[in-house]
Amino acid sequence: MTARTSEGREGDGASQPAPNTTECTDPAVLFRAVVSILTISGMVAVHAKRAVFTALAGVPGVLSAEVDMGRAIVEHDASTTSGALREAIALAGCEVTSVKLERRLPLTDL
Image (cartoon, rainbow, N blue to C red; front, side, top):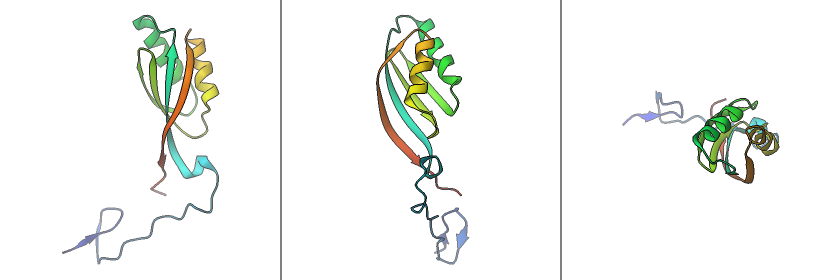
């Protein structure tokens, strides 16, 4: 039986060690993406959904957004603040009532 390395290549059974990121404390370096779940009030029509999506797309660091009536799931880098997300949504005419940090996706390929 042939073992696979962490990169998926066949090898001699010796796997390569994972990168050591415990020495670094900068969240922007340690984590590639953060997922925030936003609860939004003021979305009363489909055009509000589009306006929120467009506003989030303009925030630096936002990687993707899924917008439903009353809620948005935003994947962004660690440099993006909840304040920036709130401000963008306010410009779209809605208000963020809560922000929940759902998960951080670790940086695995250096």
